[in-house]
Length: 174
Image 1 (cartoon, rainbow, N blue to C red):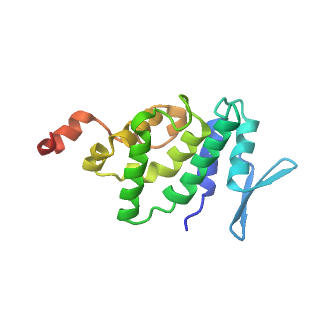
Image 2 (image 1 turned 90 degrees about the vertical axis):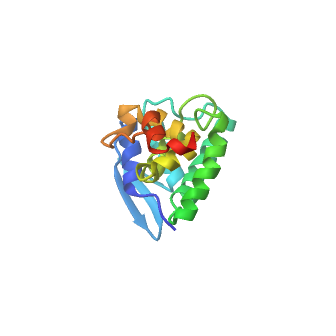
């Protein structure tokens, strides 16, 4: 089982413009120490970073909080564990269906759930074949929308979702 890396948390902290503090792992439990406070568990760390920031990416009510937590869990359980091509294709197919009618994961605005999922799915999207980018068009749209935010993307290279390029490389499908 893949784990949330310190890099995922560092990316979130940098995006939120909040100090990461010290990240440690003991017996598969990740902890964050910052100042005189120590927080353990991925969800708790993410929410502590969020509360220390001036960001509006947090949930606005209890329903949104439940949805955000559900998406964080989805990223940890499914995205970080998608190791084989078959797992990745299943993940993308399911995620594509979910995003069919959504721009963002929770309500109609970007939340910390989008941010975390963006960072956890980046490695898949960076290596996705053009045919798969077209096949999973809703995932591609969601990812491309998020990567346009330079502070979210940070030092990552833009993943190319140019539709003309996709059409030229897959003309038989249209």
